[in-house]
Length: 316
Image 1 (cartoon, one colour):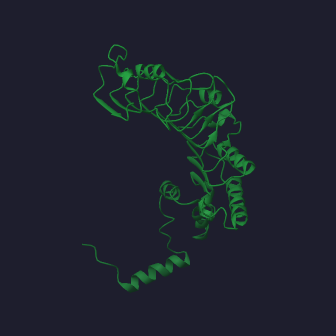
Image 2: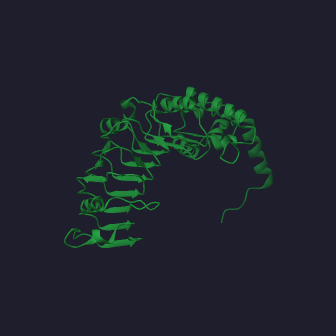
Image 3: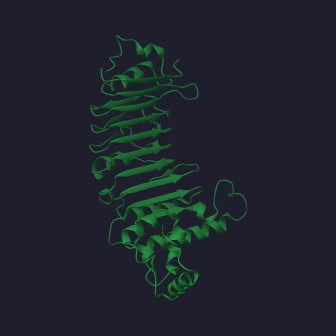
């Protein structure tokens, strides 16, 4: 059993640390320090520069940039408390400087941006700057309306992107083309309350994507939403507005699917429901919510022989 150090010895070690002779924290491997920093709020990461001379600029090479206006007291509950302008000014100044002085000699592991209220110009600029670091993970979470309009982005900056999460974003007309050509290693895509707009034939096409989540999205065109992802293993479609249906193509690798079609007394047309289910011929685990009973007719719905788990809820 390890005995505690005598008080005198511990006091001496602490005093040596304060004087700079002993710095056990800085002796940790840089990879471990970076891992620890990735779990801290961005203001706390920057404050580590006060620890010692060695830590003075370590925050600049942190592998994660996490910009969250809640760290500056901004939230849906405080928007109308009379201090929003002052809080936003502090957040804007911090975010701009953090991105400006971050080390750009290596790719960024993760870039996260979360905002309860936004200035289109500022957030547009921060996103462009963050993407210039070629992150592996990109998460943009906007919690207010109207939806944030995704700016045109240079595709070469997505060469390392593996995970993309967007909330409350207007994807614009360039998203589909960018997605198809500029994300060669993307594996996880989640779109929450996003809108496909500007291009009547937008869809999702990827040869690398393995996990896809679409929740409460809108597809306001006169065409079905076409999803062509041959490597997809997991699919979650939760409600949303798809008046002309959803077309799933080349789903040979799909093994798990969750599909919710009914929302606020609206649903997909019956033929669209049936076509959607017929695309799931290889799934082993299937969860369906809000489908019409008629679409499950055995002669019209060729469920695959690999299916071993089927969960039905709120069938009409």
